[in-house]
Image 1 (cartoon, rainbow, N blue to C red):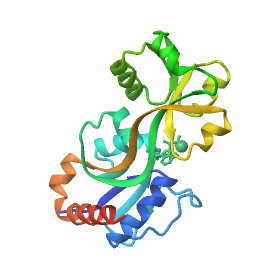
Image 2 (cartoon, protein in one colour; image 1 turned 90 degrees about the vertical axis):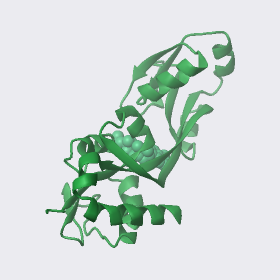
Image 3 (spheres, rainbow, N blue to C red; image 1 turned 120 degrees about the vertical axis):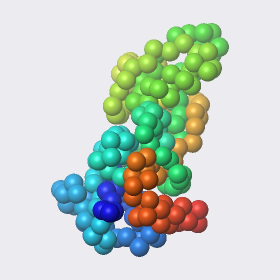
Image 4 (cartoon, rainbow, N blue to C red; image 1 turned 45 degrees about the horizontal axis):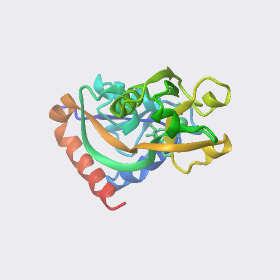
Amino acid sequence: MNQSLTLALSKGRIFDETLPLLEAAGITVADDPEKSRKLILPTSDTAIRVVIVRASDVPTYVQYGAADFGVAGKDVLLEHGGDGLYQPVDLNIAKCRMSVAVPAGFDYVSAVRQGARLRVATKYVNVAREHFAAKGVHVDLIKLYGSMELGPLVGLSDAIVDLVSTGSTLRANHLVEVEQIMDISSRLVVNRAALKTKREKLQPIIEAFERAARSE
Ligand code: ATP
Ligand code: MG
């Protein structure tokens, strides 16, 4: 049986932080996606290749079986819905948190207490909708695809829901974090059919990732 595997990764932090996990499974990637324009990268195992896709596209490639497995942030998985994906391991990489931030000086607590209707700009509309609904806060969500920090600065929104790690981007734009919604890390995602048909090849890699993630 053909047990060749395709792994979907996004370049940047996910690729960088997955490399040591691959190495723990005895797999090295020769190319650096930051330097090469190649979207398909061979590895030291001729039966395993890496495809470079947008972070938010990883679940889609894996769901449709175009990639057998991949690495995606919890933020991306929550927005995608996780259909057709098996999520066996929290890899404990690309850690950050999803938070609500507002311009310094905006009294968020009072606005919420007074039942004001808030305009919230975010890439994470599903998570944001659930968060504010659970708190009983009325919001108009404005979908953005990036640079959420700009929203409140130009009057697009009162608040943003975005990922925060050090907080330096927020500070640079005079925004303050007023609520932490959840901790975020990246997970291994596996195509459900591949898990059965390619188990022999996949299982040792999943286990190596699991051990490496635990010893981080
Ligand atoms: P793109 O840059 O292509 O628009 P993206 O911003 O989602 O997409 P990355 O910045 O590489 O891509 O982020 C990939 C994943 O890493 C995110 O889905 C999230 O889980 C995590 N992440 C994002 N920002 C941070 C951060 N500041 N610190 C740690 N992890 C982060
Ligand atoms: Mg980014």
